[in-house]
Image (tube, rainbow, N blue to C red; front, side, top):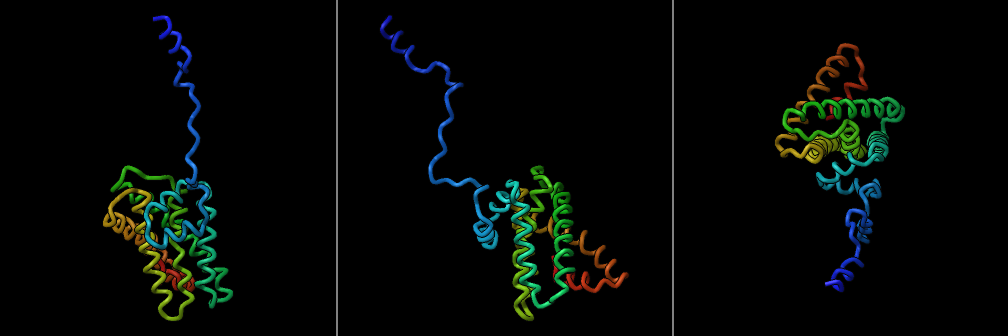
Length: 199
């Protein structure tokens, strides 16, 4: 009996103090993913990447890079107007992200903070680069961006595609309609032009 007791006492007795196991090799953390890797997933409609983007503190910085580059490429032929259209676009995206984060509370209890919505919404503007294509580019960019916004809502809030679409359309209307009316009254041509092709 004493021999068995002595043998058992040699092993660790406090499992709570055991050192955590080392992370598995070959698994990269979400924070280590590049803008290009995330952009590829976003453009192929992978909802999970938007949740990853929203959880990363660097997601907003990456999102601003995506939005600025895509806006510059898509509006390259507008010349000096880029100095107006890109800030307007970023303002609209920020407003849409905020309103979406409020509207989605009607259909989901799992609502990430505003920073997550802003990061995802900025990434969703990537199709703006299609504006460089004459004639059809702006329309294609608007439709593609709308699809990415819906996928982003689905990924962030964990709701169905139908619910995400309703959230997006509601938020877009709440943001666009008052701004369109204001632009019409005041005569802000750049803003009206942007709203024409923007969700």
